[in-house]
Length: 120
Length: 303
Image 1: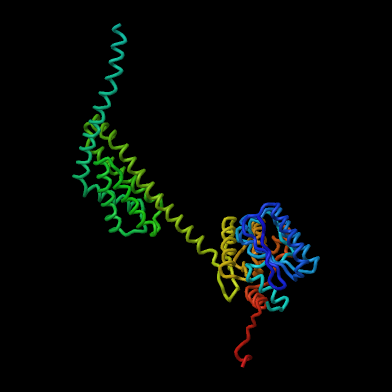
Image 2: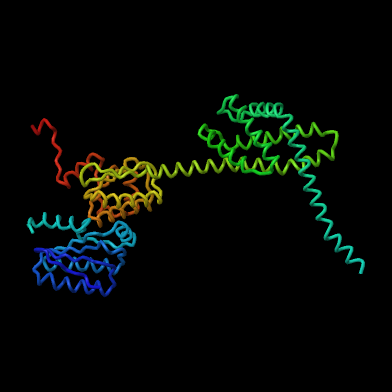
């Protein structure tokens, strides 16, 4: 299942619609790599509200995406992790160290706007 | 040929007739027993109440109350003997337990009074039938199983009621024990008081994470001033809670760490780098306000 990536000014928003398989995750990673350069984005937001399971591969991929995007001069915010998922991840030792997280899309956008002081 | 037939007939009729006559006999004897207990109600009841006071049971109740309860227990007791059904007695003992448990009546007292009643009644049977030993034997045969069952029913009813009350209270304590409070827009505090066991720790985390989402909190202050000690697994759980809150986009500030807990955390090598700690609750709230961009100014300065 492909994850739609929307452009919103200088921000790219990828909203996960359903549980993702490993190949979906790799596909999302490739798509973000390409788009962030093409759209000259300053930040991306990955919305994980619909993900009810985050395994080690998923969280590692997210972490890698964030680090990679940073190397390309943009910032990543991960939003919408469910409370149960968050706790399960922590218990499994799947940390998201160094990645910015926010409650939901609105919070994530607000955070970026404050940071960039831009108005969409 | 004759031998198997004799054996067969013996086998078929022998025990059956004896059971039938036995149960009939028991019913008859029980009837007589109940009659005796009804006739001597006043005297036996008084004797029982006297023995209860003597044994210093039910000290939480007045003499009059004991007498009133003794009367209804007595009547229910005789009723159970007469009908052989225990539902009414069960219901009564549950009802009685409900009334006396809040007054601090102990299990041994309830068992004690029922056993006393059993003794009082047995004594009265002894004195009535002391001349006729076979009769007494038969009466006791009928009385003892029934009396034991009654004692059992009352005691079990009491204990069950007590357990129900305890369960209810545990539930109440659990619900009360972890309030998640909003003190400002987007700022939650979670005061923790008392011992944290793994179950409570888990519940606490669940409530906090849910609270973060429903209140859209950005900063959470967890105050553990009221926690005296913490073991390694709970400390670890606390660290995990902090981390999980971060995944929901909230910053956690832990306040009120006692020297003992701080020592524990250091000893077990918990990574404190991830934890934001401030000395006391006031300091924690002030820091949270700074993070949220609030500034509290006294009115005199503002004017």
